[in-house]
Image (cartoon, rainbow, N blue to C red; front, side):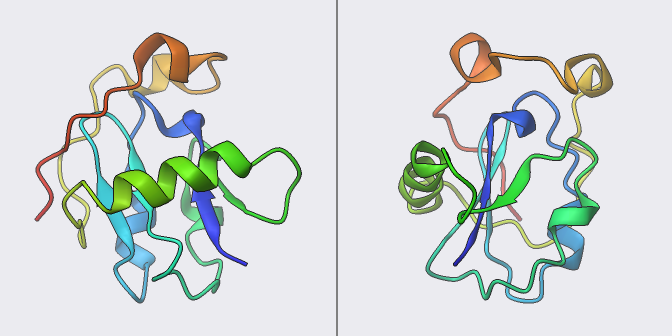
Length: 113
């Protein structure tokens, strides 16, 4: 098992999860984070820290596309190990919004540390 970041993170990117991760398995895109599934130790401490409820265990049904996305982009985006002041100003407006992947996803990397 591993944890994955879903589209609920897009345009929110609060980064609270990064602060608690004991193995630094988060990677930063322009407008979302992903988890490297091969680095995640399945501890689960990140899941309750996410204000957008974007982090889920991959054992839940229907998360195959998010496991693939996390795997792909964690290999391309820079590692992020501490919370930065990069939460978008309008993050709360996008929290809970449906269809964010189709509307806003960007494959561009973020800044990382």
